Length: 541
Image (cartoon, rainbow, N blue to C red; front, side, top):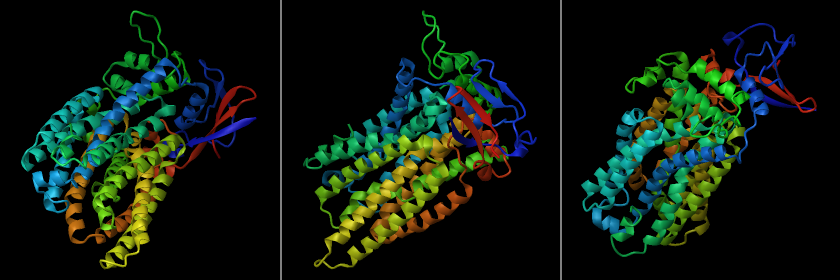
């Protein structure tokens, strides 16, 4: 009895163009004879499928828990971003915060306070590559501490704005190193879930912030707003080849002989380890631009690189311009639909909880979800839900002071919740995972820094313009995002490259193809023959 797993196949123009209709010769892997490979199949995607089936990894081993700890450390960097977003949403609606800084809930003053954070992110992203992965998380965390100290001690609007700049600067450095670190430490078969889980750290920060501000919103003093304020590839590409090999098999001598595995169950010849090292050898250049912190040329030097950078740019742009910027002012959206102050804070908390559940559900499915279908379908749903919200908001605004249909306001809030859920399922897991998958090893950190810069630029526009637009044109501003999300859906359909189920290095084949979108859809087969205990890799017809 055999089971079949489909995986990508590069175009004939990218490799051996011999006929593949029949299997003429097979060879056994000398280290793992249970793997049988059709000699004519050069597709690393199929190699990965075979290696994954033959090289199992124990999720309950000590080394696996070390990987989980690395993931959690990176996860906390994302929590800082989420905490700020939910915190500013809430304290902006607090009476004593407004008395202290006189910024107004909407308008240009509020836009400056919110958007200066993204200016700090822009500046921080330019220096993020200096610190490396772990160093970036450490340096960024200290920047966050300094920024929060300045903000929480603020007595003037200028000091508050300065603190938010420093906070954004630190966040950018931490969140550039964190997703790259977790992606490169994760074994290939877990990479999708662990890397996409990183971005859900937003809710790990936003939920506590929403809960804390709900509690402190009743305090009749300034304390109401002050209390809430209070990798292996890196080794290899820097010439440390043996350390990289030892990480993957966890052959680490520290006063003891062998420790247990990270990626290979203690087996240096494990198919997963062998595949990763082979691909390191092919993909990582010892003279790459990553050795020069100021050199970003690898992001645009070749057609392959430009396609990769396009995917990163689109995710950075669309991930922030799909209407999610409205979330910074969701309490004002609930207010416009007739909800009182206490209910606004409750809905703010519930919204974070619902988004978190949806995002974590998406994370659990990430290793099986095709990226293209999720991006196209999810963005289209965002468009539809915002259109519904705009319609109900328009109807509510047409009512006079009396004779209002409360169900219209409830439907408006529900459609906004559904929009946030669609966004959480689509973009929250993929915003960190998809760019990291698309970028090649030596350009990954700088590519993520570029994504942070794009996110910061688009967020700056969002946070500066949204409060002004909501004050002046109210619900009509939502229609801008309805049209934009329709445009995004079309762009994703024609340009999104499928990355699900690939190793990081094999994507070089797809992005080098004449049509990477088409190449990413082609298939090959890895067949597990359970009866004979072998894995057979064959070409798809």
